[in-house]
Length: 189
Length: 151
Image 1 (cartoon, each protein chain N blue to C red):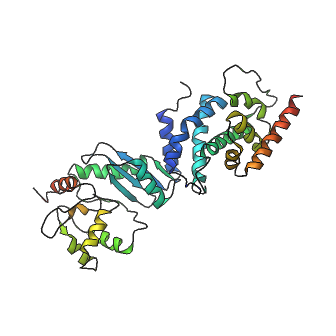
Image 2 (image 1 turned 135 degrees about the horizontal axis):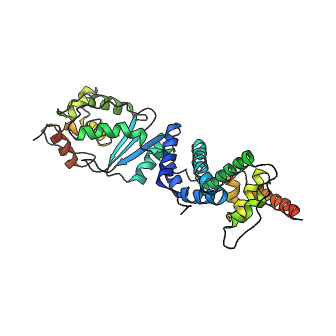
Image 3 (image 1 turned 90 degrees about the horizontal axis):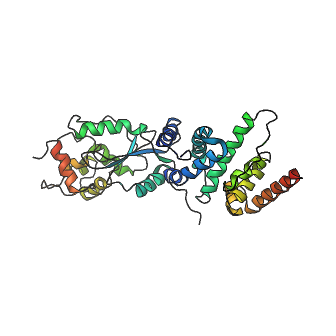
């Protein structure tokens, strides 16, 4: 028994690693949200990843490639994101107050995501409108791709972007989630 | 082609149990708790500078054994005699421990990793940040010194 590594000791190391600022990405998996399990990653600059249906192994490889190999599960750095997501999903929060780390995104993506961030709670917009606001009215299809690759869904509200005819069109996390989020915000009945 | 280092989480999960057992066997449960944390913090501080992901197990055990050694240097009371009693069935590295503590760190690490953990010289070389032949030399120099001490 004395040789067993206790969960307390394991957690103590994970907390110390984050407290010393040694991590490229701290992440955790929230198992119990209304949207199912969510993997959330933060860097020292801010939130960098929210992922549905997390397959941690693949997700960790992607995070390591984008931000550096020191990727470790550590709950404290993601506490605030956890709390804000919970409040939002309970209908008690309409906007997120979080720094984002969108390092490595191409310019066009950043322009589109910046416009996306302005689409308010309970509103919807179209791919074409967002393309025009980002300076390229013909790029509706490209905007669809940006939405599909949104690194921080929910917080950057790609669920609020719908087709010109009002159809929900598509969602990286599955259409049922898009519908669930729009329902939560009262954008659809 | 060199294998890229895996995400630290994968490295940590793969080796934490063995590193902890190794530390408990060397310095007991109480000391092992702090040494465990220090081992992986030290690994984390160097992790992004590793050029490939080979020999990570040997690397983790080497860091752990250096931490044990650092602790002993600080704490060893004057005149303490190494405990020479060994029992059947104890892991080989435990039997080696009392004999190897006075070797220079590289030779000691090479001897422990070779004869206690049965690692190949290529792995030991990588763990010590040198080459296969340097690891072979360090281990044989260590063994020569141990033989002299025993006479």
